Amino acid sequence: MPHVLTSPWDHPSQPLILIVEDSDEDFYTFLRAVDQVNAEVTSAYSFLRLEDGDDAIDYLFRQGDYDGLDTPKPIAMLLDLNLPGTDGREVIQEVKQHDDLRALPIIVLTTSRNEIDIKCCYRYGANSYLLKPMGSEKIKMTVKTLFQYWFSLTILPRDS
Image (cartoon, rainbow, N blue to C red; front, side, top):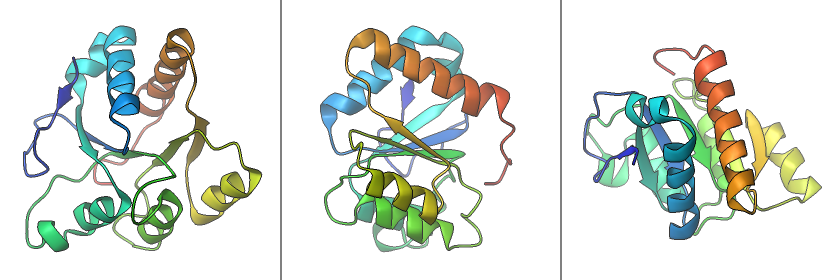
C-alpha cells in the first residue's frame, strides 16, 4: 500500500500529496487503485488524508491545531467538494488567494456533475476537475491517468 502518514505532524521523506476526503470508502478505494496501477507512485510519494475543509485550511495555513508547527507542504492536493464544515469550493478560493499557496495544484475529485460546481471550481482556481468513477477498472484508469499527467509529465515547482 502507499505510504500514508498516520499523523499530520509526520515529516515524510517523499513528496507529500494531500488528500481532502471525508469518505473512508472513497479514500481507501483511491489508495488501492494507486497501489494497483503504479508501484513507483506507491514508493515515490507520501499521502496525508484530512477529512474536512476546515482541517485542510488549518493545515495549509499552519493555524488552529497546526499553529506554529513546521508541517510539510504538499506538492498537490486532491480535493472532494462536498465536505463537512468548509466545503471544497471555499478551500479552493482560500488557497488560491494566498501568495505562498497559489501555485499548489488543486485537483478536484468529486461526484458532482453540476455545471455550476464545475464553473465555480475553475473560477476559483482549481487546476483540474475530475468525476469520481464508478467501478474498479474505471477507478484504476482514472488514477493511472491522473498520476501520469500530474506526477510524470507535469513539472511541478519544488516549493509549491
